[in-house]
Length: 74
View 1 (cartoon, rainbow, N blue to C red):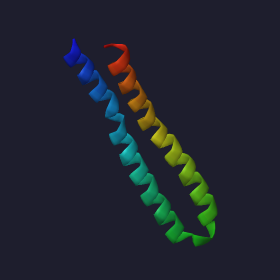
View 2 (view 1 turned 60 degrees about the vertical axis):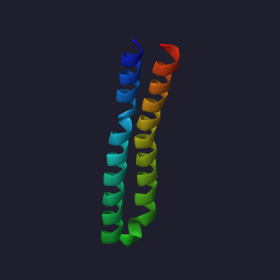
View 3 (view 1 turned 90 degrees about the vertical axis):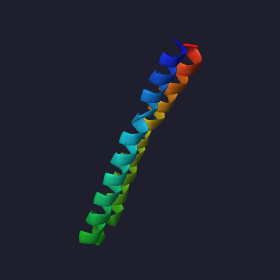
């Protein structure tokens, strides 16, 4: 049973990979957009920060679920 709990927690933490990939893609696209239209830098940065916060939230939710799996199902 303990092995299954560890596997479940490991799978829950894998959400960090998706968040990392999403943050990298969003940052590269924002950099390209700023390079094409420097006058829109403020608007692009606002949208980027909001998107990064939402993407990072998914990784944090995965970490919280992993902790819940480990400590509640023990």
